[in-house]
Length: 315
Image (tube, rainbow, N blue to C red; front, side, top):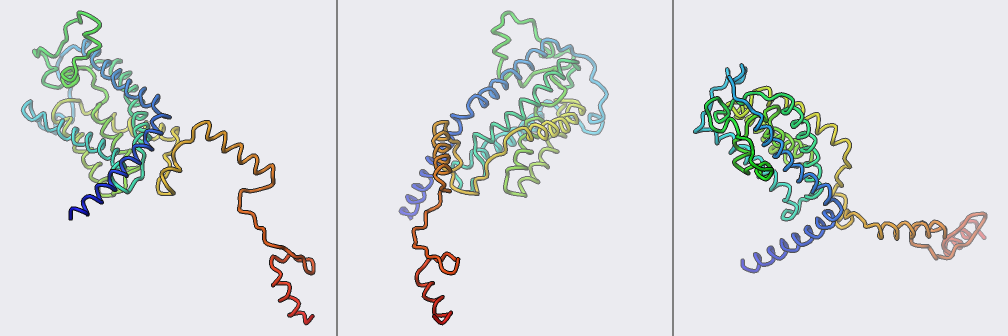
């Protein structure tokens, strides 16, 4: 038993080391795009914090979802956040599964490059939308009489830049159309729908996305329009942005080492090598040095074949 555990641990460690080596090479090529996507997450949070200064509480707008779904209330508001946290951390763990499991269909660096591209495009549209018109927040801390409904004018630029994380994000007001929670949820679900391997998990993910939509409305974090707009906007964004991005390499076609992007030096040397082969008239195949003999206008590759031909002709 101890020997089996030691052997499996050794295999797992080699697998992790190999995958880390591959991902580091990919990260060296794509780090600028990944860093830009992460920086934009801060910009998005900064924009949401800024619109809170413009928020003015008022009467809650008439909403069909509010009529159909009873309010969860302040004591049950955690349910929506719990479901979202489950979706978020489950997706993050799935993107890192190639480091442990043998069934590798994705590269962690490349999958997050796509995810961040989808998020940045969707969040850019969201920032433009909620700055265009500020609606009175329906959440309990955004209503008239709440101390959090209005933010006092900032005393310094640093106060704005720090965005009071995470309290400033959780208790934000004014950044309504469209739902940020649904952006993350739908981007994660759509990504797994394309690159995931288990059908039952895909079906469960879509079910959770629908449940998350109802919980957001029931907890009064957003109006129903915020959720509805997120559903068709994010799907359209992912559809069009996905066409512009290069497709992920299929890891099932060959060894992982063959899919590591070549450096400029490697590409140049490979190009020169192929050029020399073409100049020399070689296709790169192993040359055939067997003796060839021509009989009756035909090239024969073996002398024995000549003898066989003579015997058949009676000579």
